[in-house]
Length: 303
Length: 301
Image 1 (cartoon, each protein chain N blue to C red):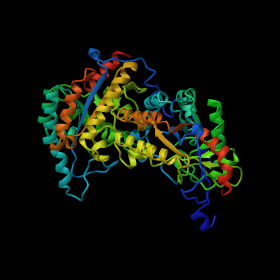
Image 2 (cartoon, one colour; image 1 turned 60 degrees about the vertical axis):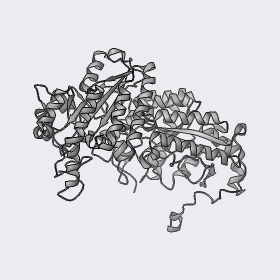
Image 3 (cartoon, rainbow over the protein chains, first blue to last red; image 1 turned 180 degrees about the vertical axis):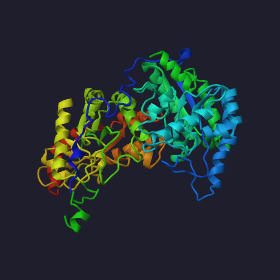
Image 4 (tube, rainbow over the protein chains, first blue to last red; image 1 turned 180 degrees about the horizontal axis):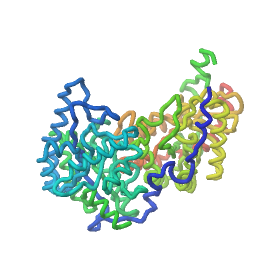
């Protein structure tokens, strides 16, 4: 039996995208941007700080890194908690040593359960990006709008510490519904990090900014999914920096996002190589270590 | 088709890789190297094909869609500049609807002297389940769309998302197309058995496709570059006996990532400097093969 005739109809075959979420442009044709201090490569360290309930809800899907064994999965629950208690503090120390201000994409549950961590993040000058409620707080089309709105509100309420509300958002596994960009805007957020289609901030049609967080160069993708070593990861980041620094001479400022996870790079046998990477990058004259918020703010003044 | 025909649809004759007629590429070169960037458009909300799902997540699949969109906003130009720098034209596996959605990308490739062949309308519309009229419609659409957008007449085919029917190859030959990139049985062009007209397979390669390198074999960028160089060196050496073909199939959203493009540039530099390679477009390889070797090969010589 043939396919339905509609399978060969293309209602949105037109110039531009087959959606109205944002407009097309090529990064090589835009007005060049520059970063503060004459720097050309913004290095954006973004840590995902997550709490995995031992009871995955699987609605709408199970987040990467979530529980694996039949209940009770002590193995994965505690291995993730290791990242939060130990690995994250190794990272905070590494940031201090290299003089790096980072963004921490934080589950609301971290603030509710471990307020000390939030105080330490804030005291050391890092940014908090809202990263949903906990690792059961995933979003996808099919989640009722009222529930999605409530989830965003709960996350922001938990993370609005020291009188400051997060301005950025990262979805669990970057998964959104059709409603998400609108709901994030309505919740008063300035930017999100879910769409990996660009290497500079760009505006969605509703004014929300997307700051792309390279998902292929994350420690999760390189080390956990592709099973490469921390040394290979560091080499790949170094290669990326070199390339972007070269490209920036002709086309203007670039962003190198380092998306990292405390229970992956924060392990004893990996942290030395990561510290060395930060040290090497911090010595590069082209590098501007910045939080997501700072990158978006700088980009905005140049539009 | 009965069971025996289905088990082997008789696409080509068996021909061992030994004592073959000698292919010599233009300029006396031992290996024809062609680079095949996939310039694609994936729909964000495609209709369902009963035989295969497009996206793994409910639409919009933000990571899946946006990763591929990176090609059309960033990495196409990054990849293309490296190719142009080392003298490699592309032979483009094109989702022809890209001509409508992002004509800037297609125009850039055309300006660089790249050749276009069809990779279907969208990489989210599959051939599985199509009847003959529907398959004809996408071939005719491809020919018309690429001609209008670029002035080129497509000569080859890579099935959208590698989805075929057993009638596809016959139809391509009937429409006068010259080569298919869908058969992976050889390192040299080969005649394909079709009901009417002529068709050859041109080695394309899944194994050194960047998608396989990075997502099947989980190679690091430098490991992938090393695999390409080894593939090249071996085929170039074997080409002394009879000329070989190496294809480097690419997706800008993979190879054009900032951590991968540097090691890849080294590969092109290596091949360009080696001296044994004829760096060509797919159509040129097909022309040379038809002019010098097809006749003998198709008749069992």
